Length: 194
Image (cartoon, rainbow, N blue to C red; front, side, top):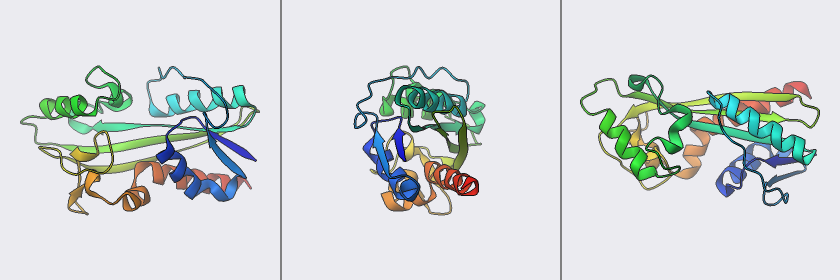
């Protein structure tokens, strides 16, 4: 059975293949599947956005489709930036501006608890789905540290590791990250349906 990842992100593809590779004969990106489609992510939750992407690609392709949505949720900001993580400062994907705005909003704030959330949905052509979520908790630092990762990784400090998410080796981060946890939870649900 073929699985189409509702993304062209090579990093995500590699991580998904590592965890779900045994369940599918082939796992490909949208580009590899010859699909040009951009889902409007207008959901209020990560799960709503992932569900919408997965079902649109399953309908277009006639194959199983996997989509995720993820972001940073900061307790002191009522869960923001949340589903707006990639465009928190206005421009989509401007990590530097997003990080600067987050640090500015947390200036003088004592409670800096935060977590990354990842929602994953596997949609089938018949309209059925399997979903899972994963979380990666930490605290927001006063300034960025680390070169690995992207987005808010340089700001999420992991007390049990004594470093930020961006200071972890990529393999270690994949093992403990929100996406890795969501993928493993999804695999458990799929195995339970087998």
